[in-house]
Amino acid sequence: MRNRRGSAKTLAIPTQVKKRGRRAPPRKKRTSTRILGVDPGYHRLGYTIIDASVNHAPQVVTSGTIETEKDDPFPARLNFLFNRLTEIIDEYMPEELAVEQIFHSKNVKTAILVAHARGAIILAGERKDVRITEYQPRIVKLELHGNGNATKDQIRYVVNQLLRFPQDESIRDDEYDAIAIALTHAKALGLSLTGS
Image (cartoon, rainbow, N blue to C red; front, top):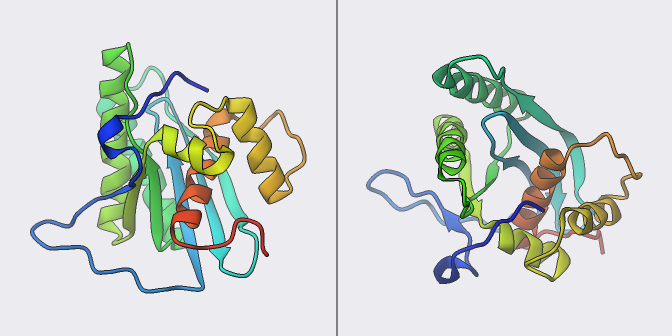
């Protein structure tokens, strides 16, 4: 895994983006929900749509990566990410958006650019009235693997086991991270990860 470390003060609780000047409505107890999971990035962003329920193991509806052109101006790259995510939301109509929080990085410039990409992601969800929740990378690892310092290979293994994926080295880490974020959110909502 990338060297990501969560902040100790908000470690145990996912944060929810608040609507301007009003509290987010309380969650209704649902038996199933569609979740968009996003691993933010400005060059390559991982995403997935899963259907999760109380009685069945989650099903991946779609997943992949969105890549921007390295030579494009940065605002154009953000616009591309925003537009593509908006298209995904329009096509698959998720009720929830789970996105990874920014991680502490030694490379401040990269962290700032990823933070801008997160802004485009959150704006796409907000504009489509999708409930947004953020998770620290350490929490995702802890919830799925039991170890907040789990490696990318360990998270890949857990995702493969939970979803009964065949081992596929062509799936990028960004995509696996997005699936892991969506599964973490399903677990936080009280939905099943195993179908039992």
